Image (tube, rainbow, N blue to C red; front, side):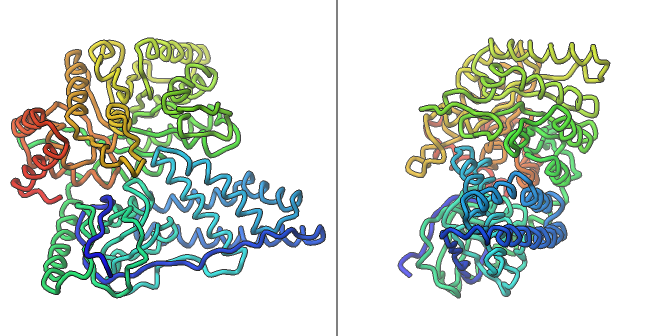
Length: 579
């Protein structure tokens, strides 16, 4: 072993100590030779048997996931089952078998790659990881077609540090958190499925460490998830010390879970709203279980991306209604379709652009295709009769866009009134602040909306001119950059001047290092991945507004993101708050 430490990206906080287990799978090799016409029927029959086997396996995995991780994680495999059974997938494979005279395996590989590549080419990490889901489904289907053993990690025993190039949903479903003390992947990041599941299972994780060929099974290792580093072959004394630290961290997490029912307010009584970001109706229940008091971002892209046809008004309405009912009157902020850029659709041909992130996307498509936009707005309005639904427009750059979107909204309201369909006449409408032009001129926008929600992922990218998924310049993506903090401050102050609230639904909302600064700047609502809620709530309950204002004011005098980050960490450590 030539390295003593691997450095990557924090995927899940905490410390884990154990022995290395490198997870490798037998490669799938598909014969690309053509088949005879007489073999077509047998290949189609083989595909149908493989689909049946795959569905049976996924149902078993779903039940295990429900037992070990809960309903939200089990729903992933319900979705996988629906995809496997989706006629657009199976019929596409059968068409290739019959028209191109290729084997079922070759046709499956081609069709899966077509589906997955659409997602994997996207820059948005959440959407790109859905491509990994499609790959996982294809992997399982191909292994069943070829008579290979399925993937899985249920056989692991002892206390291991699991090392892999990446992990699929099927892999993580078989993890035992009492066995796997830490997770390390050569690729991926904090939004990868492996990282999300690691946080759910409370397994410390470091992603994107690069080549893992030199790691040897049985070697002692320590995963420092919060710091994003892996210590290899530590001394016996170091290993024992980290093992003790890991035990204490796990006990601390159990204590945090008890906070779900505790109020999210500072020591001096200021209420801080903690909401969840979700992409499916099932995710909402999980977020509430961990203490979310609302949904700050409901992504609607999947409704448009999963089918060959645009979703109907009724299809959308049923999904939005389900989320609203699960929140029992608490806020559900539904973002209108945020497609384009890196999010291509099978159901809508979008133009190829030289610079799609500065092009035809999100609200720009909605205002161009008002027929699609109004259909979605009608569905959201109808769902508002069943709970605290709010509307949020993405990618707003000008006040003209807000006015134009609201004009379409008013048309939808008039139609529903004429049809006698109930909706909330006073539904609140807000915008995402993710383009610097809005943050700089927030005082001009505030009178035209009911709330702001800061999308820090894009705001940081556009402010710093940094593609956060570009590994060459990833270190330049700095949410705590002084210029970003100033834009956030300006946005919050503008909303407060007209008695509106400002929320945040970017990754920064779930970053413990940012919590005191954001409270000090006056942020009203934090919306984040469900697993981050207990940690952020602990910080909220341990601080006062005055302390946070002091931290924010001090941070605003600093000139670099590292200086601010180090300062925020030192403040939390001085207060005895574990990261």
